[in-house]
Length: 119
Image 1 (cartoon, helix red, strand yellow):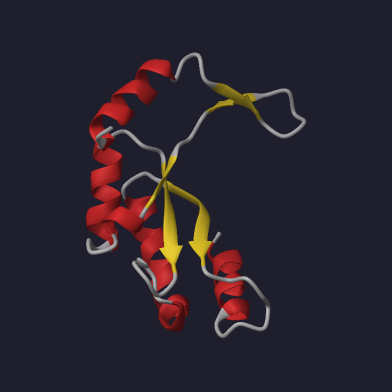
Image 2 (cartoon, one colour):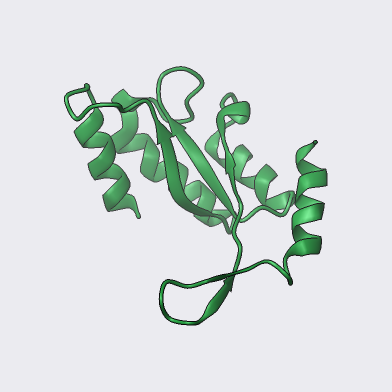
């Protein structure tokens, strides 16, 4: 299903789709984050603009070598820039996708620290 059709369906369902905010009893709208891999050749700003125009609420950036929006060796510089581009388009970044399977992997610690500090 094309992104625009999914966005239309999400907008149509939004008044019904509410999720509870952790333990507070307050409800908040559901935010759908789009996996950025299919758009890895686009800039951070272009990706954010496209997803915002389609009606999505967030981006799940890929932080990895194959088809990554952010390369692990450049995570300290590029992840904050990617998040800034998302925020400038009115989107959230509440998750990232990495190749990390062990804390001993190169770039694992710096990726996690940068993600934490960029939140």
